Length: 128
Ligand SMILES: [Zn+2]
Image 1 (cartoon, rainbow, N blue to C red):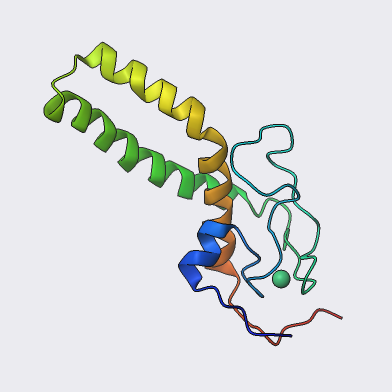
Image 2: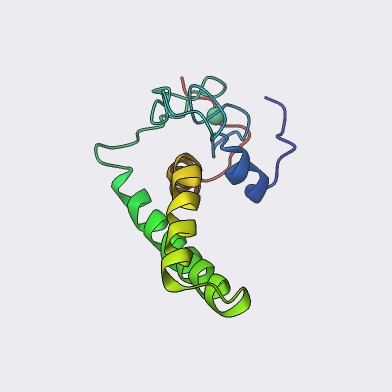
């Protein structure tokens, strides 16, 4: 198998298989479609790495999501209030709009980060 051109960060953000960095993690790529947001293939279409290594594997992704959201939302509110001098109500309305738009991306990037933490890159790996 050819060595992937993607770095770790590129692979995380492109939501590729952590093992080969070639196959897509999600059945329908892209973060702004909501019909099949959670649908992932059982195994990587390129190298055969299991995308659900054990039951409940993606519970860990909730903690990644929590960390991203905690810092991001706090920073967002702080910028709205202290940089743009908006009221608390306006800041929170803007926050909810942003969450509605970015929900799918945050969900998927959390899973992508989680699986990249637990599965190491190995371009020679080919599941028999
Ligand atoms: Zn793969």
